[in-house]
Image (cartoon, rainbow over all chains, first blue to last red; front, side):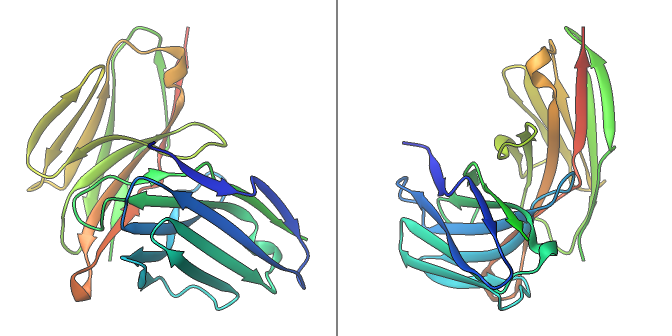
Length: 113
Length: 113
């Protein structure tokens, strides 16, 4: 199994809503990542978890709150988002944060109204 | 800081060879990745270079020169399905022993009959 899964595929939410994005992998990878990708732009790193601990937070606003309940799961909790937060949110995993490629999930297309 | 440059767009003919260049200026270097991303989909891993030289994998080859801060991705026997964006990404060390991957803006390749 070399797959990273993400749910939901699409999400529309208002600025006062609370929602969560979910990511799962069963490859035994110990590093997991959240990226944000706007149209025609490259993925931008948001958070890195290494061995279930948050190791990198790229100065992401607190309205985005990551959580790693166990080594296979990664969540991104969303609250009070802005329309400019609309983007494709990609989850990725790798064996660890060393010299290994990242496997990406299909992403969640988020629209904030 | 990190600066990664790629041409924005390229067009090539089916069956031909195309070379996509990437130049980088980063604080530290621990490897360079190439990813392919079809429109609306997640990036998929193509290649990884950490030492100078050419890595070949089927129709795809990637070259790295660390002294020049330069890499290229070579695609041979182009097929229509190769139409996609190609992302160059550099891994660099952060404080605390962590690693961060930064993506270039990507090169949109269009393969024409």
